[in-house]
Image (tube, rainbow, N blue to C red; front, side, top):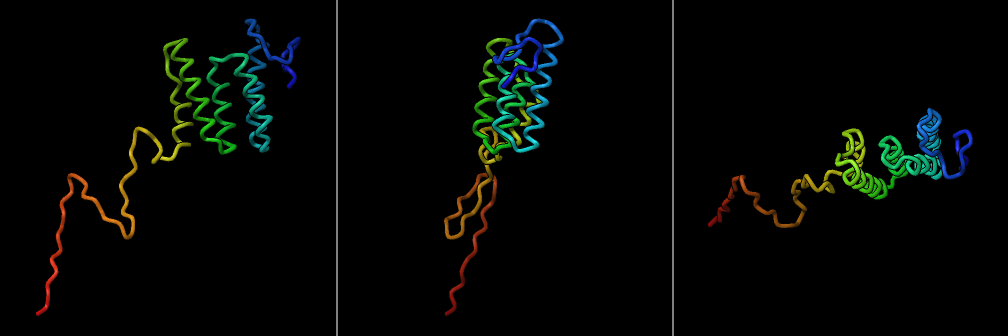
Length: 146
């Protein structure tokens, strides 16, 4: 991928404090979104990762990477990238990702797989139903006709 920054190299934008580096990062994130809409996921991921390489702590760049993975159906990759970013933020800045990024990841994970919420028990036909605490049991008695 060519750099979108004037005088830039293939490795991307270098944060020099100029408006060009910010413009470049916004352009890479926008390009990633556009490529997702066109189902060009490999190129979208490349653009998003280029933004992350330029500014590893930039949440919008990391959000673009997660968005590509989710659009392509790679939930595990999205979660892996999110966890790496979350760890980096905690280590470097002692903060958590924004609610917006957390919502992207939590919406994509089925409720049964979320560690915070357990899936409700369901009866499986032909299997024994277990009693759940807090619920009363109703016994049916069988009448034997004589």
